[in-house]
Structures are given as structure tokens and as C-alpha cells.
Image (cartoon, rainbow, N blue to C red; front, side, top):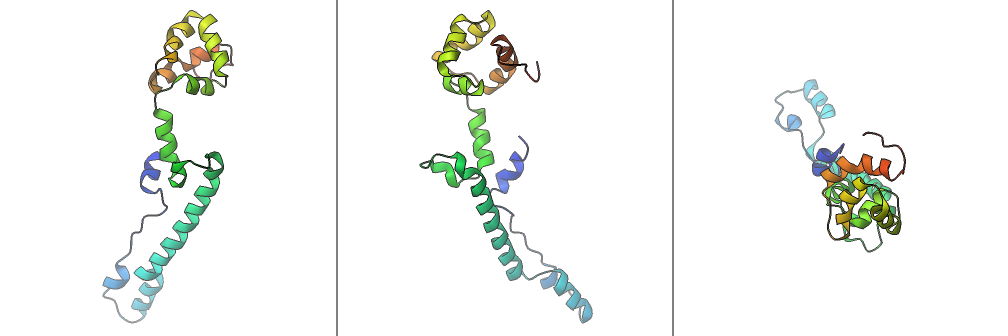
Length: 154
């Protein structure tokens, strides 16, 4: 998932890393003034980090808040890692139906009366789950056998 490794660390925006050039520079005169203009003080840079990260978090929450239930305890967490964790969980019947854009009732009927491949691979979903790797491997064939469309990859 693109960005997952970045968001694991940057879930609240930029990491505060400070220059030490201004503090530790040994130059004097006009060179010192130039260093001061190029490299901001720790205080000034810290203020910018706080301002930028506050803006980042506000925009992030504005983007994903509408998609969460009002009582969702996870609502204040960064959504990329949360969504990835949710995505890789094993699939039960309801999640498989949702990913196939079918009602659970239609999927149950399709499993009961569908192709041998569908029956063999999805009949256990009534009582068990499928791991994400298995689901992604069989998904194109399930889509084709249930005549839900043409799979992007086979």
C-alpha cells in the first residue's frame, strides 16, 4: 500500500528535526548574518512545525471523518495504517459479500448454486474466514464465475 511506511512515522505530520548550524556556526560578521537568515532558530522552527502539523492533522481529519461512525473510537487515529490493518484481516462472509458488491443473501445463493469453484472456495465462509492472500488469489475467478464483471487480472 503506497505511503504505508511513510505514514507509520508521519501520522501526525512532519517529524521535528532541528538544524544546529545557526547555534554551532563559528562564522562572524556578514557570514553570521547570512547563516542566521538561512538557518532558523530552534524556537522559530519549532513554531513552524507546530503550525504545519496542526494544519496537516486538521486536513487529514476533514478528509476521513465523514467515513467513520460517530462512535468510532479510532476516529482520531491516522487512517492509512488503520485502513491497512483492517484490509489485511481475514474475511468473513459479510466482508466477502461487501467486496463483491453483493448482498449477503445473494452471495449465499451464489455459493449454494454457483460453480464448483465458488462452492469449494467460499462454502466455508459461513462458519470460518479466508485469509487475505487466499481471497486475493481466488477473487478474479470468483468474479468471473459469478458473472460480476471482467476481472482486471486473472
